[in-house]
Image (cartoon, rainbow, N blue to C red; front, side, top):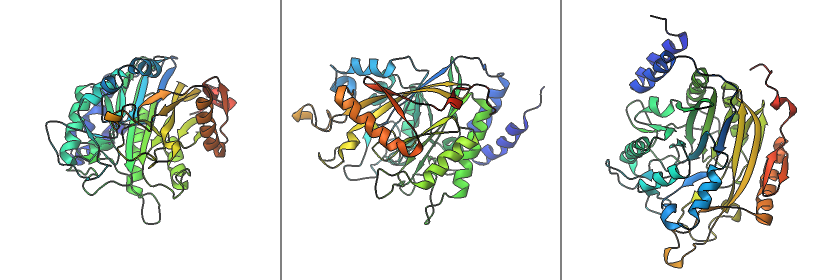
Length: 396
């Protein structure tokens, strides 16, 4: 009988102390299954804006849905990621925790819609995860798991919520570590005994709570021993007064996640685009806005920039980004059918022509502070990567 690696032995008591047998056993079972296949196959990752989806696009936008599916499945990505920003109704029930237009819950059929769009990796942790209370957390986990999504960010206790999730692909195993920061209501955060969200908090001085950040870094370090590529996701509501600005604490946190072993950092929260930084040859997307935005706020409530986003197509080799292609999308602020105004607004479509250039130029302006340059190519753009990024002989 072989000895267990020191990292796994160290992880086991911590996971058991959080009351999560699955978290404790998963790394051990993964290790026993044998080494990962580290071949030269490039990994294709698609990152989109968040999905605040409350209506089945297949029914509401039947005519446009095939084109949207083709757009999102183009290039056959191994990984297609979004954040599920709504609680899912299910057998555990649940009472709405908000009494206004910001209450978000949906029938499980929306998950079938996301599945048909090609998504296979989800973050379930955000400030709306608890919109049906703890029962809603449990129903969401049940329905997401039933459909075969790989998910992270919430769990039946803190051990599960903070643990990395693993997606097997033909290009190697991919890990997701997910967390949420800001505007979580009391009771939404997971504890050792309570289901909820993997919360990372700031103190009154807008400094990261050390124990929260260290929990994330530990999960990243462990994930990096088990997966070829680690993606870190943060849903963040600690915004600056000017929502176009990325806070310094967040820049430092994202870079620290890369230092801990992440290959990609991606964030949502502010419902609009923030910039892209290439840090240590790895991408940090500070904000990808929304892909689907089924808000019931009145028209004009949000700035025009909220109704646009980009889909980021990445090619990674040996954990480093080799190519980033950006495809802009527009979301319709005004419903397509007056009789179903709310149901028919907030759906995406590919941006073309002048609209595409406008969205890409906005993203380029947001990214300029990080020295990131876009090279325009019709209705899309490529990121001009530093030459060192393309080398496969650099030390890890």
